[in-house]
Image 1 (cartoon, one colour):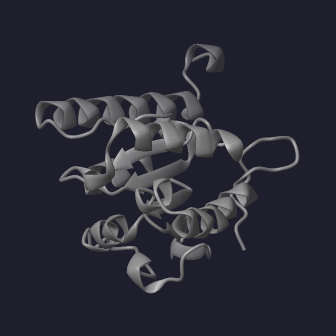
Image 2: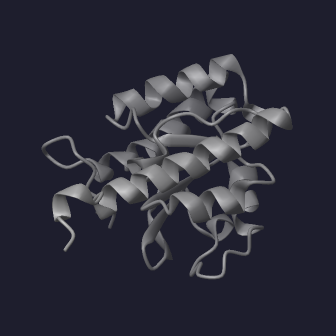
Length: 176
């Protein structure tokens, strides 16, 4: 018979499938001259950012912000024509809309299993998006880069991401 040691584990197969799909969609985005996603697609955490916000300063701010809450590996993508396929491929445990346009873009996917729309939820409060995915809506980051009040509002909501990290610094997916 077959030896279990010669077969890849289900986790490895899932990781390979997810990484392959994310890389394929990133190539499509690059060909279409769309902003490139970054981070680890298998992290379980996906941030969708408004495409109009893509800039070097914004990407740097996202990197620093995610590092501050110990989510350096979170996958960051932009609202694009490939967002539905990307969401289906990655199957995140936590889906975060950064800005109202990103929330509307997620809602426009008409995701068949969605229980609650992003646009109808308050900023900074976790909700059940699908049976297996928590959702979080954040304010836009671009205005937070230039306005102190917008920065405070963004950070107050952004810090809600800390609940995803357990005491050992691992992902826990336990928003309440």
